[in-house]
Length: 271
Image (cartoon, rainbow, N blue to C red):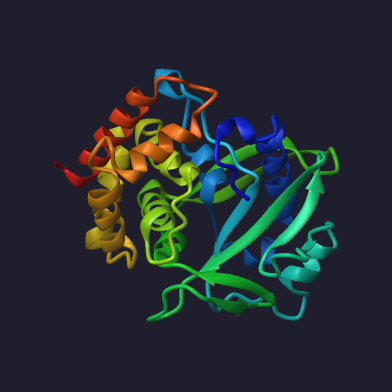
């Protein structure tokens, strides 16, 4: 679930999402070779203290990329494993799992990549996974990030989580914003800014990793570049305007945010 502005997110939403992640990841240990964390929580884990005074990442979802052929064998399924943790199929959106965590509805989504398909969904193991270009690259380019905190039961946990590298993650975010099935959510535009300016290894490393996706045949790369040129290259374009909207109520220098988004886009495009 995405809100239009940062201020609309409950104060505990990010902590609740991390609690859900620390609960889910060990339980899906049979699938871990075929899973990678993507989405807003991945942006949060790959970024550091944000320069410029604007806030860091936030989310109410746990998004996983999953290999199309993933299966649990004879020891249960994803839905049965997560059902035992209280994550149930959402009544209104049957392709999502949901659980109340700290009074917040936390959603779990799965994305996969299918040959010659854009959009739609596939049944993977026994969960419905949305088809999305670039997931296979995210699965093959992962880094382990140590995450510590309390799970949904209150137990202190530490897990090494497989998180999509910043290059594939930027491709996914740009496709989520402006691709054929793009949603043009303000949060996705803001996440692009965070991924470049606040990457833990520095902005230059983020740009280099993104550009490498062209040679690595990321199926979402061409659309990501098209989205940058069309939606992020001008201060009055959709991306900068919506990224600034996301910070309304938290950071009022809207023009500065828009300028930073354009600068990040031009570095990604090498312009």
